[in-house]
Image (cartoon, rainbow, N blue to C red; front, side, top):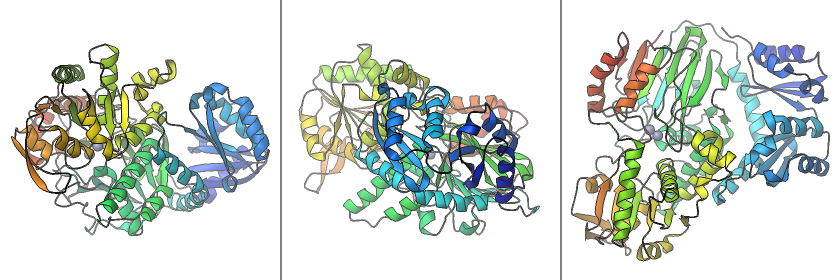
Length: 633
Ligand SMILES: [Zn+2]
Ligand SMILES: [Zn+2]
């Protein structure tokens, strides 16, 4: 049982590191220990001093200077001299209250240096703490604004993080209540993911999603077991709104605790929420929450790298692992010390490599309970390989352009669009595609910019392109971004082209506009690459309707014949299919004792359970109902 309070941790760290240098102050910022040294060089130059301290004290330790050792202009001069010009530094910004220096560069690897050597050198020599931001290769007004808000809020965040540490490292009460999970959403359904974990000491929420277009948009926060004032932490597996959309609402109603996620997930969530507020305003709808709630949320976010373990409450340690679903997506691993129990929650995941992402992690120190998503666990959910998917997409594109038509690919702005983009780049390179422009519309632009800022979180395939060949596939010359809706008619009346636009299910957004402009020309093709939910226009097209009802440019509902060819190409899915799910159950190490299946339609989960039982014997498998609570220990 971990029982150290903030004071005890501070004392231990001070005792441990005082042998090397004069320590002026030790602070806790969220789960991290920040040590202020008069001369940080004295401790940072001792090999392994910090690593050993971190290991002994089981905490991440950050060493900073008590006060800056150089003024701003001499610090800039030092940084410019140290960092090779290849890094292409774009901006250097200082935050006095926190003694941080933000360095924005095109090639951050050169800024960081071998094993972080340059970062250490900047800190040791100037006393400023360097924070490195990779400039996206695609210029994004959203990211510029977001990074400015992030930098200007860094002093507020520091204060918030100090407050949060008292809650994380409070004195345990030593209760013996047991360990429980309650499924507040995404049980026998897809959407509004939210799982409550109650332990002897604490309460944690895994995901806080909405049900987009669903009958019941929010998780069951009305149940008595859910107490907002008792919530210690929220862990968000990835940015899709069915896992993150309700976060600002928690803050609107008074939650002021931490939200753990990866850096790309943070950026993508901010983009999606910003877009939601903008869209609501444009349509004259009052959004569920305000921008103030979103900024409040941002200031409580604690970003983690894959594999980094932190204390999130007196008895829970959290580690995030790659989930292979979308950029920044994570599997959440909770080590509950008071119950000697480990929970692995997959969020959404994929268990095969794609061009964009490596497949989900499968090895963990311990796992007793596995909570696994099941979107594609139905009898017929066996997806073709990526190669087959590419071949059929490419042949549709070839045939369409040969007859002088254009191809519309409705796709989710985060994930699917970028997967398809990478496949197209390869198709052009291998001469398997005609040399036609690709138009990208709507939020795909900013979302792709965020992808280009985080190659470290992408597949080894992309990383090799970016780091070894210095070639970012997202900036391929075939890609053209459509910046305003006025440009759409020109795109659809010009020569052969490929258009990728959200939403993927044609429930709104630019893809519907393109459909209206393209659907009655028999030379065109509509290629559905996403999941098409019941009741959506995408689903009706997939089922072969001959006429659609659509709002025209004058705002009137009109009927239009479907003359364009409608194709379905599966295999670009971001989820594990039935085969991958079964393989994952068999290959997770160590073998769990108990499995919960979530995030799937009821009928599919029912057909999957007997298969799962056959593949992994001796394991209890449950499909929870909404609101159901299970005692795990
Ligand atoms: Zn997802
Ligand atoms: Zn999901």
